[in-house]
Length: 229
Image (tube, rainbow, N blue to C red; front, side, top):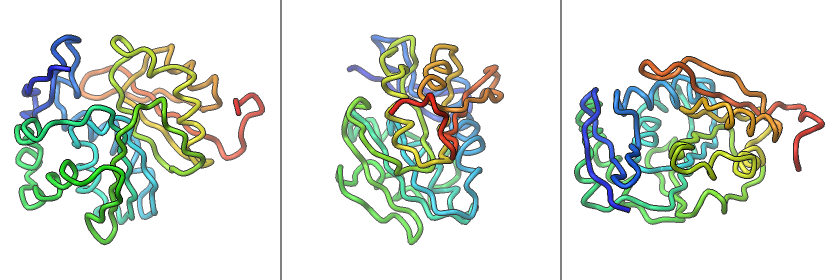
């Protein structure tokens, strides 16, 4: 899978899979998109709480890094698990400029640890932030009622439609605790219907950086009777 480093409109870098014409982040701004979708529409809901968090698509590590930067402001304890089937190379990581653009060069070592830490091991990045990286396909996820929040950051349905199906969202539903939340940049009707079919209550929110919509899905505390088991 050939990837190249490119710059987005806010100056932050991302990767492009050349064969697909697919980018890891919005070309209008990798950092701006991450904050809007995953922090403001997801993490902020859990201020002053202990949060079990699962990221679907660890990728560049941007979402994990921003979550680390925000967790102290939000007075949170974060247990972060990131799933990635195709990790970045050390050469690719070296070309990412997130600590610089975020004016967080004092935390650059944390960003490097996100990528260099061993897979399948829990690493303590701060007294209130642990990280575990899981190298596996999304179809292999089998967690049961473990997470409060899911960042669903898979590649788009136009290139990987199999990741936006009832089968995958059933796994997400089962992985969440009652009252848990899933957020994603996507708003495609087929994805929304797949979420609803497995029991999620889904709402549309304003999208990031000029995009019309995004989706936030909640696993209600009293499961609907039609939710799949």
